[in-house]
Image 1 (cartoon, rainbow, N blue to C red):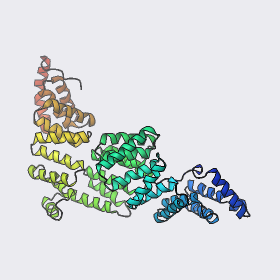
Image 2: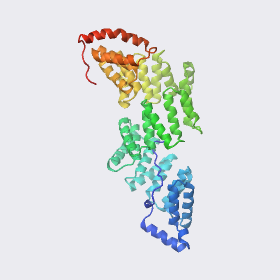
Image 3: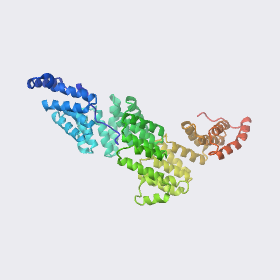
Length: 476
């Protein structure tokens, strides 16, 4: 699914006609037709425009065809025919119409841009790039052409230096002009690929401030949220996409992926069952969910023999073996990360495996690098807190546990370890407050051992506070 949509919707009438051309049409119509009211190509074209704007595409197409029968050299009618064909998913007919419009008016950037964008969708990149570059040369603020070129560069996996150069042009364009949401979404797509997720988030925020239901921006923000385990945001964006396009396969797949990431295979499969025409992506996701549901290490390792770089199976083995065989899990996690280096979840899994293997220093180094890229990744943050705690670096661990309690205020175990960190640092008042918060939230069965430990510690801690021992922690 593309992140950058560039094909234009019908433009208003004033974009199409120069005064000279209108006069020419009127003279031609008056000299060639007996009944000006019923055979005027301009009037017929306008009827097509009206139907087009109302969403009556077949009627619009009928009027455009009638106008072209009267005056075959009518580029505006050909252009709008192309747009209607796109809306009817008749891409070959759309391509012919755009080419005809360009043949009739070679310097017209609207059909040039739309044809270029359509050719990008058809993976005809060489011709598309020529058309789109020409459109930009003719109109330096052609945002649609920039968006289509962004998509082209991403689909062709252009070299980083090309992407950086193109991003610089987009940054300049968006800083000077009054850019539409699509321009900010294109800029975000490049920033994401170049690894600047913070900048991408800012650009997506600008795009959605201009157009709250911009599909490209919503899709990208959802992908970023999912990569950071921010499932609430990802699901909210998926719902908005479905409100805009109820039949969107991408939005349904996104919902299924969110459920799968939360280990809710049943709900994920229900969503996949709603997709009428199964796509390769849906089939792959179903296979992934099935593999991720498997608890049989031997079966998964046997499947891995067919493809030693299957990131899906490597990731599952990384998860399954963390407790019983941490060192083996580490190897699988590393291999999953190498197989899909751009999938941050594999790197997070690697960090978690390092914690399980008690390689805490290595875990801290890796997890801090991950958090520079994905600062809101809850799993990475939780494992970093654990590694620092195990290293007895309580001041640093305290900072991480504070972040966890702010993000998830109903997570009892985070308060438990935060309280211990305060306790070890001699900050007894804060330790007492967090022990008590833990007891309020803790589950009697699930947290039985921790509750017992806290109840043993509290009387001693109360005496120390009464004696004025300990110190106040710095305000966080």
